[in-house]
Image (cartoon, rainbow, N blue to C red):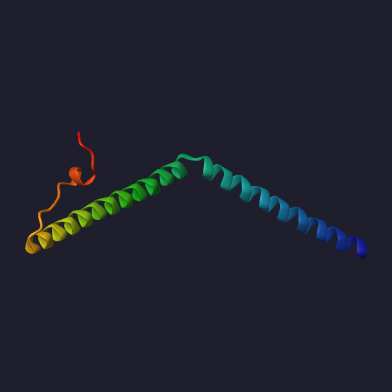
Length: 91
């Protein structure tokens, strides 16, 4: 009786190990395939597009704020400084 239980458990363990090995091999093939690389390139390009759009939006916001500050200074009668002159570089 005990021998049959041991054989059943050994068979279950063998089946589990074989299933895991097959699954591991399948995942390894997918990772090495060109489809996975293509997907990684696509996702990276989406990230770069998003970063570029964020940079463009930030620059647009910076310019708008600069315009508002310049107009506010003009209303007060102050003369707006040239950005290069504000740095103190005399070249």
